[in-house]
Length: 478
Image (cartoon, rainbow, N blue to C red; front, side, top):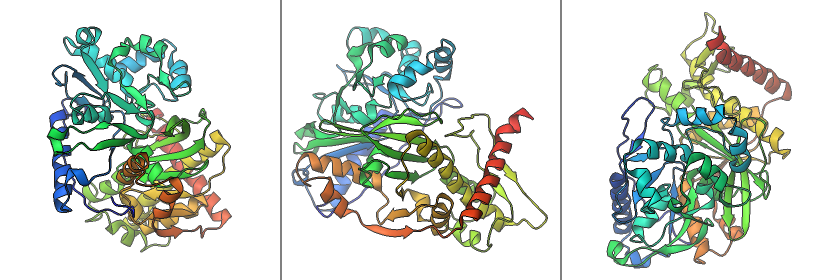
């Protein structure tokens, strides 16, 4: 990215997803390392630039993915255990059975779930031979992907992370801003393995000249959802963004106050720059874009995901059809892993257009569920919704989202917001940009959607959605 905030050059590279057992997900760390080096070199070459031309590097990453490596050799003790991996489910249940969930939640803002890094570390110590012994000798280091990359890029000189990633580990106290000794004791994790926690925007170290031919400052770190929130300019209390990917993640800035949720949301650190810490409420929707992929790949109702808008607009409504895409259970605010996908309201006149429209509408209804929980938890009225991610390109969905939430929905021109957020944080640290006000002026808006639905119609449609959700929740009990 350049001074204008616009993209100068881009490179992307997939790497292999490893599924050794049902519910397990791993990454080969050398695959990740090679992909990072390759895309940096490709980006420089495409723009005819050298490493010495770069003001700073920012890193954004999938947050809870867990890495343990030998600090002497640099070799990981096993593949990275990815955020989706469910292998530590039993450990979470044991902690719940001991009545410890409230303690973890009070300190970290998180649920006791295998999603987060802490129980993944414990699992590795219990199942990878020699790992605990190495840790106790002081030879092992832990990090999320940002920490591991910085350690490699600086040739082992820096072992750091930032507030946003630390806040997703289940062992970091988001109120005291410190690794929590009590939680570390409960998970039997030695403190010596942990990275130093820094702000999201500062110079952490320089890349080794051996890698790119120049020492480049690494100056920004944020977990992917927090990076997107920063890029979207959600700098004030009440500002909200939602990223529509395979699933979707919604974050509301709650300012300097960590709001405890009573409605199944997570409390997390949105950003930390200098001494200023901003918190957020986060809601996870398990199935968003994946529901459109289901229409395409399993149901064969569309050839391309983008076709969904065309067919949805061929009918004026769903004719009473509701689809609850709880294919892997249902997330916030219900958090029921046993719920299953449900179609209700079918009649003899129901056709594929109604099903496609109902599927798209389900993404907006799920978003409204999370918004309602956020507003109730925080007491903060919603200002507007900033959207990004693949499904945000669907005009029908974005208009229905504005209608059903009675909100203004704002889509930027560039929806690659996670990378923009990392760039902004890095640029601020080296005075490439002066402050957040300058960043706000760099944002370019593609389209704003305003509510066009009556209050009565909105209330009627949402009441029927809630009935459909109850059917999905109750299915396993019938």
